[in-house]
Amino acid sequence: VLLQSQLLRKGIYLEEDFRVSKTVFTKVDYDLGTLVKYISLGEIGLPDIQRPFVWRNSKVRDLFDSMYKGYPVGYLLFWQATAKKSIGTDQKQLPPRLLVVDGQQRLTSLYAVIKNVPVVRKNFRSEHIRIAFNPLEEKFEVTDAAVKRDNEFLPDISILWASDAKITSIIKKYLENLKTNREISEREELDIEDRILRLQNLLSFPFTTLELSSDVDEEAVSDVFVRVNSKGTKLSQADFILTLMSVFWDEGRSILEQFCRNSRKPTKGTASPFNYFIEPYPDQLLRVGVGVAFKRARLKYVYSILRGKDLETEEFSDERRVQQFELLKNAQSRVLNLQNWHDFMNCIRQAGFRSSKMISSQNNLLFSYILYLIGKTEYDVSMFELRKAISRWFFMTSVTGRFTSSPESAMESDLARLRNVRNAGEFVKTLHDICDIAITGDFWSVSLPNDLATSSPRSPSLFAYQASLVLLDAKILFSDIKVSDLLDPSIHANRSAVERHHLFPKAYLSKLGIDSIRDTNQIANYAFVEWGDNMVISDQAPDIYLPKMKNRMDRQELEKMYYWHALPDKWEEMEYREFLQHRRELMASVIKDAYSKLKGESGTEG
Image 1 (cartoon, rainbow, N blue to C red):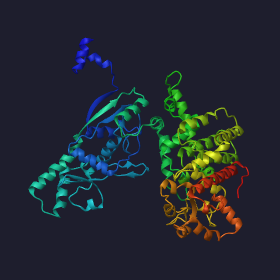
Image 2 (image 1 turned 30 degrees about the vertical axis):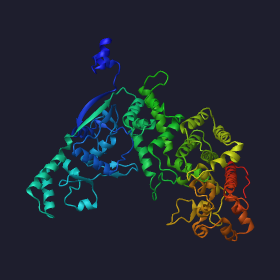
Image 3 (image 1 turned 120 degrees about the vertical axis):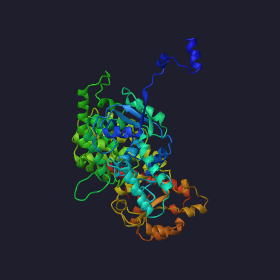
Image 4 (image 1 turned 120 degrees about the horizontal axis):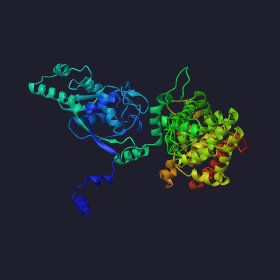
């Protein structure tokens, strides 16, 4: 022991010392050509545990520049596992032996340029990356129209690695084009030839890889990724489940991705998932499918369940895996059913919301969809009752910010209450009970007015107030145009017909010594007005512009205006902060009335 201690202090390790710290990886060296070859064959696969290709083309340019100069470009992290996804869109020949954990962007960049294949961006659009090279200046650029016209550039370096590439012909053609613009010395010709050959020989560029053992579980892989890549995004359980789908149900993964891709653009004459509330990503709809299939919001154990693991015995079973995947397949078919999808969107519209601009939490939207599908497909709740229940639920969760923080915990708790539900009546009652517990008596008089005391343009309470104006069929302040019409996302113009205007203009408040954005941009200082009125009001004090506006309407119309827009009597004469306090209380009252309308109760409207 004493000898070992002395040797350790000198940096000398005995072989048995390695048992003290067992590594979970091995170091393997590759050159770029070998990596590209293994990717082409499918031996190195992309498990999709990171995001779509997000690098800017300029970053790809810089990568090639660094390699050309002989600079190190970092190591790669692989995982010895089985998957089906591979880099690129062409068909592979071998099942993947290595999955890319860290280095996806670099490998995708290199493979896309060298093999001249498109990458898929986050918006699901395909794009070829074109990188140009100037041999005279040894300079790389992202190819654009100007570069294409410049004979000093090879406009697309991908031609150097094409299967039928003849390097002598490429160099000869480049020199011929260059000579049409200028004289070239013998020395320059030799430099050009040498530099183009040097670029082509980047296939011999060395890479160091760390290969994680196949018996390392997904949580350890994620932990390693975070520890070695400080700029990386922590890998989520959804990422691993999507990878598992690629292995055991690639068709389902593809259908999921296609649905998300189609949701981003409207179609004519054919049904599509396009809507004005959300452009979903695969991991989001996966969460919905998991919620419907397994009644779980936490994905922590779902990955193990889908691998066929018995959580009690810790044993794996192929039969169990098949059974669990059948549940997920059935759930996903309901999630991606266009009739279900659009009927659910109608529930959101019935709650007074009109577009994604009014949605503060996509988690709220997705979890509401889980409940909608469970109610419709498992408890056969009538469409009339289901729309009412989901609309009320969505409004409640929106105004309370129920899923803003720790959404999985809140969702898990709510789903747990549904596990003992036996019929449609109990399902609806359970949702109503949760709503009643969430909104207590002092919510309207204390909590909500306090929530409205903010200048945040993305406040859940602000969106709830806007939805309330829609539900109450309100009109724009001092106008006969309905709020619902002007919040309709399908109506576009060069300039919006309606604007949020300061009731106490900023310039006027500045004269009073109030110029902090947090004070001047309070939610309670805004109201919807027509843009023409906005221009007329300009920077005038309320007691100056208000009489002109009030003259447009009779007493009954004015009372409705004051009610809808939560304006206290003689508000124009109030001290500013007193006005804000009173208006927040009245706004909370309007939201309460709208919620009562959703519940089917009579409020104090008007």
